Length: 361
Ligand code: FNR
Image (cartoon, rainbow, N blue to C red; front, side, top):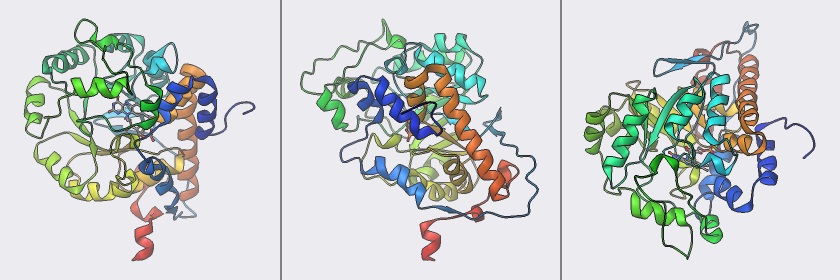
């Protein structure tokens, strides 16, 4: 591709050129047939817009709040693992971009820079994503470190009791480099010549017995607000409210876990209705355009998180690339709002879109 990318998708091509195949496949891939991977993006294409005209859109305000924190736009950075495989500066570069865009970064539990390094590198608002290990003391220590270093929320990922079957990683025998957060705590050395070492690592390390009652344990060891990431059904949304979490992220892990789950955008409204406004609902999966952000907000999300595009920006152009990805999505959202007659985020309503279901009714 010649010159500067003009949209987020074009960063993917640059990333492909920049990365060794094993790493590109790791970032790009989904589980098994990758049905959900495709659907996450394509389901957005089946939602159309219902713009209103003759509204004063001479000023557009994209800003909003997430858990009380003011952000410049409802677009956050999703937790994605191992940024140093994409760029030598790793998560520090991503966090700096988040700070310059005035948005929230969720740092992955599987980061390649430590929670301390990321915290001291910039003043971005940061949440910390958590996996619960069989060795709960390791997860508890990480939470304490995140708290001490000014992280503002815990994002508990609940869709990964085991690792999804990512066939590209199995084929490539994807390596799992030691993660700095766990140095001296847990070893990434795994004995698996057959396939993905990450899969073997997760099997040996993650606590597959984690269940709803363990939210009580988590609550007892942190004062930070807790969001759960990976809810796809009304049943689980209701449970999440019952156990008292502070927010939900509708997510299928970027289609990397259970294939043939629905596109996240197609279940967002179900979750939003189940929660009846008691806690905020955030969203991720397949966001590639400002119009996608608009559609998710119209269906009740308070904000969206973006995964792969951020990593592609990082792989292609480091901190600048991440910044450009976020800026592009913001610019597109701003234009969508102007052309749809929505001067502010709160003006975006359900009646501004038409879903497939609406067409059937
Ligand atoms: C992820 N995701 C993820 N989620 C999480 O809770 N912890 C993690 O460490 C990771 N790691 C990770 C690595 C890579 C390479 C990808 C692509 C994704 C899932 C991520 O937070 C998010 O749910 C999806 O990426 C959203 O979908 P899109 O934006 O990539 O389509």
